[in-house]
Amino acid sequence: MTQEPAAAIAPISARAYVTALPVLDKDIFHFPADSNRTAETSVDPLYLYLCSEHESSSNYINTSSGFTDKLDYHHHLQYFLYGAMCYMALKDWDRAILFLEVVLTSPTPYVVSRIQVEAYKKWVLLNLLHRGKKLSLPKTVNSLAVKTYQNLSKPYIALANIFVEDIENEEGAANVVAEVRAGQQIFMEECNLGLVRQVINAYRQFSVQRLEKTCAALTISEVSRRTSENPNDHTETGRYVIGLISSGLLNAAISQSSEDPATWVLRFCTARGEGLHVRSEEQQYDELVRQAERIRALQSHVKEADRKYGLSKEYIQEVKRLTKAKDGVAGNEDGSPWYAPGYEFDHDEDMMADQ
Image (cartoon, rainbow, N blue to C red):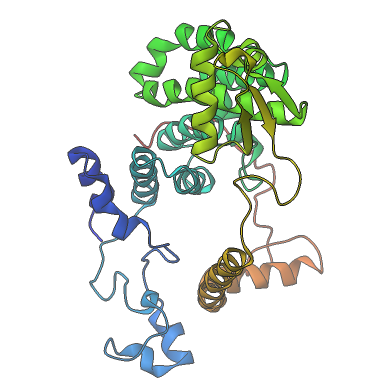
């Protein structure tokens, strides 16, 4: 691994996003670090030799072996942010959201990194675009970081609030469009205007999908009134709804009783066993097999991570500290408190010093 995440940067520069997939599609379970050779060889002397059979590549891809340079948190954040951007270009929203959440939950020397703030803005937009929701950050993100993200991303939060509220109230897209226009300059300067425009298109999709919760059937003219920017263009609305059904985004059917699209009836397939989303038993079985394979692969890496963590100096020191804490105040190895009397914690850190 080099000093820059070239596997993700080069495809973005060349707009050749597919070429990065052979690397990005492989999950990362370990980042190279200085190897603890004494601890490793004390458990199994064979780990001393690179030609030995290793259960995990983490045993030999480290700074001591020379197979990697020393990496810092910048490389980690950049790899996943650029990887997420590749997946966005390919419209693989689930994978892009996963990569952005890795960025947001990663530890840094500061409260937040500027890279993480950029990832948060894209994460908010992708949740609207792909899920039609404004989601909370994972619980592993501390409250101070959450407030910082929100304070530095106010135009995105405002757009998300209007998006969700207007869908719930079955409003048209006018308010969302107005909010986008108000923050258009900001979105453009931060290179997020393309995603924002896709959010506007997604607003209509989720507005139509939400009708399923309140209606069993309704005419295209009523769909136009509730979801279209031009409520009188029933022909365009009919084509749009048919497109959603054909692409599998809407589990429904249209009854065309006449040539007038306004009289067409949209019927939602809510009963079990109806519609285009029904999967056969064979398809369900194949999905369960794929999930079981992913779980087995994950278990082996979790066991390896637990083993290496149990051999680390940090873990041993933490065990000692917790043992001493049972008898009194948690302290250092010599029994003294880990903080000095009268020590005051300084939270006034430079959040952007990493750039």
